[in-house]
Length: 282
Image (tube, rainbow, N blue to C red):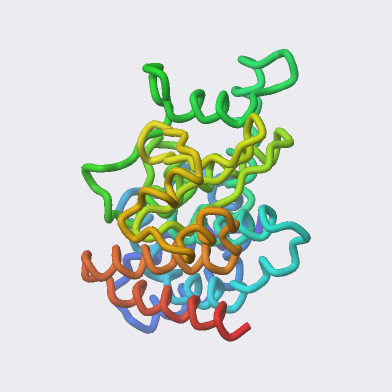
């Protein structure tokens, strides 16, 4: 009860004009930030829009510091997919706002897998069937699509936003395909194709590149390497070699760097750049 009374008092002080009071409120909120969403849910009323915005502003510096300090924790995961999911869960929680927690991404992915498996009762989809379920393919309705209207929006690199809204950029859609496939026993990798990230799968004894941004189009890797304008031995090697975890995460961060630059959000842009440096120096 005492904690609830204390929090209610802090909420009343959110819009206080005194900088001294606001700083004291900020310190108190930072001290309870991990349990803050649950504690706020127990109050008699939800925060107003203005109160929510003030809360985000007060907690912003601390949240940026937490992301930077904990960023490389994804290295502790045993698999490439686990590392990618852990890193992107951190990014998604940061991008989605102060109430969001990293655990929400795996929870949303698990829920999506349950939906998929209801349509494949005979053991689950193969890589092509999963692609068609997600991205349409063969004239079916697409559950997830490339966000061509707002291609450079930072939201396209927020995996929680992608899962909720059904839109993304090439690398976020390919990553969604991969992380869902992992939960169903499918081996799906990334292809660090220049300018347009692709997924990479082995299906029916052949290696395919999958353009998840364009309705999950399947292309034989050998054909892509042969007919690409920059066709050369390096391109042949590129399409047959899985993209390393580090290069995938750097590509996400550089997309966010560009997106924040276009929106004039320099604080967030500099944070993304520091995360790239941490990754490259590790």
